[in-house]
Length: 86
Picture 1 (tube, rainbow, N blue to C red):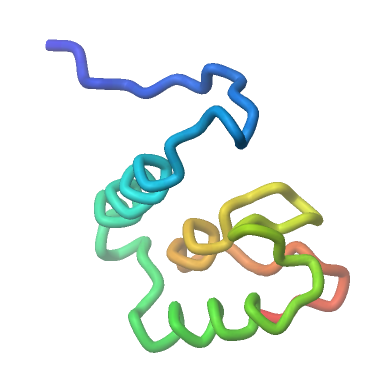
Picture 2: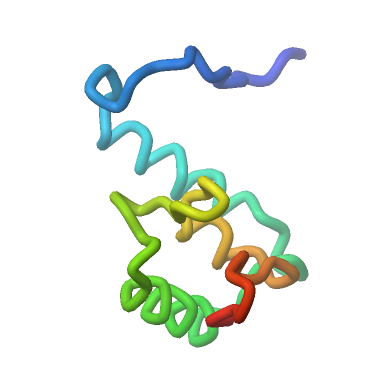
């Protein structure tokens, strides 16, 4: 049985449904195995630090291009800055 896989269509931001993108992101985070997911307190702290960063733009890190909410949700990930915030 084939899973419903969403592939990048190389859309411009103006062509995307932002609500759908955010729902997809939340769904992906929920699917991270519990033993790989950042604890809720640490997750919120990571996001708070990202919000203070001048490299945050529309939910994305301008250094690496990731969605910070996704990167912060994976325990083994870290901030991509030279002097990481988390």
